[in-house]
Amino acid sequence: MTTVAQDLARYLEDRGLVTMSGAGKDVFQFSMEDEPGDAVLIKKGGGMAAQRSHDLRRIKNETVAVIVRDRVFLTGEVRSDEIYDALLDISNTASDGSVLLGAVPLGGIAEMGRDERKRFKWTMNFVIKRT
Figure 1 (cartoon, helix red, strand yellow):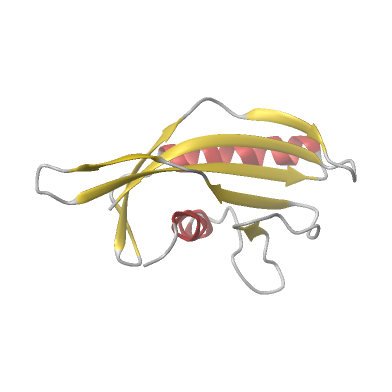
Figure 2: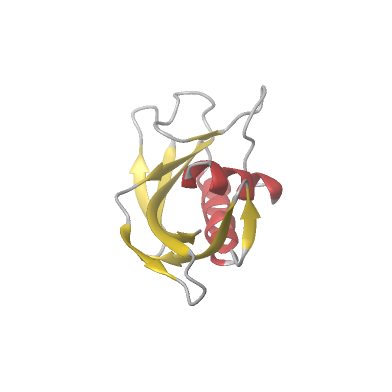
């Protein structure tokens, strides 16, 4: 079984929005590395109560924060929009033994200003429904 962050990273990598491994790795799960300068963090939150589907499958409602960091404002803003839209498009997507049923945004994309190295940051929060 994989974590919700791993499932989302794989989903976003399949769409060409992040790179999970190798020299170009730019997506992280627990904390964002200082390099590369342009990166994405997918961090699991506490979540909401689980449910049962009509066929008695357990549905987890896991919250995630996705943080995008970029050295160039426009590039980071576009990447944030693309990630937001990709997550909205999740619908019954298989991922390593679980199924991503959908993503419910908990608001829009928020600008977070700049970090200590003057890189721009954005955040977005979702409830991810998965089996």
